[in-house]
Length: 381
Image (spheres, rainbow, N blue to C red):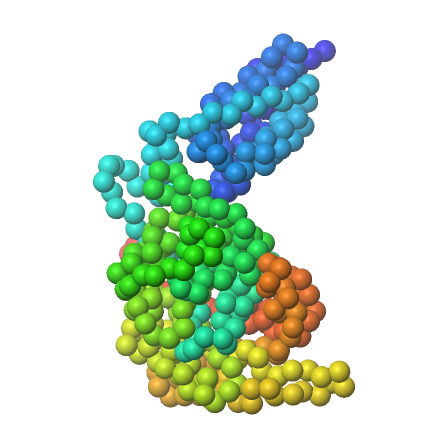
């Protein structure tokens, strides 16, 4: 004896509510994507689904997830899915609900700059290029995501963007009205100007354009509820560092250097900008610290002591403890894994460089968060 149609339909709707949109990570029923779900007399369920855009790159993923979820309902003999596209008005309603704002003309805000934000924002900076700042960023992001945290990365190095390749993020952003859905790789959401340029085209912009790009990455991208946001800054103390201080005054600076004295001196200047912007220095990471030889000895290719020197100098400069969070040894697998789009913390987690990077990520993940300026939800009795 078959179950009543009403019972099956209720179970089908419950099953659909377990399917998340792959980009937005919220139930398709909650997003208004399910237009209809009807059970035919033959037990075949006909689902009409509205995509946010006609060329949705994750159509096959949605088809697979819906088929699996609904197909498990007792009494369902098959699943047929008809795809449609949201109207402009439906997309605007979805955009407003995701941003938590209503009304025409409302300006998007940067959620991470709001007093109630619980997202830890780390800006990864360096005084000069070539110290491995982007490698550190993507590996920290992957390690934090592997801990189960919700992580996003902004490739703020507009001229020298490299994060998508190193993280293996080969997807393209999709758009709902003027809101951008970032692609994901290894559980990390990522946005980069390289996703909007043709081929390997150079970006030739001045200050105002750089500021606007960073603002759009922070306000127009739908990040969802992030635990951690990492920004890969360009080297030096130029326009992007200044814009970051204006847009995300609560961002904390993580300085990357090598052991070389010349690099360390430049890194001090990158960290010293925190004095002028009143941002917190979370610590220093020394990259390329040594090369481990086959006999177990270490070759200090770039000298030694640079990371400790920067940490001590910045501690004196800001009058608060700036720790040396870790020393990352030279390892060709870091480069190989980055070129392949699979960070070494995932590709070779027992490698010494991966262990050191994971230890830094662990320290950032468990660090106590300041509640200064944040509402505590308390009322006097």
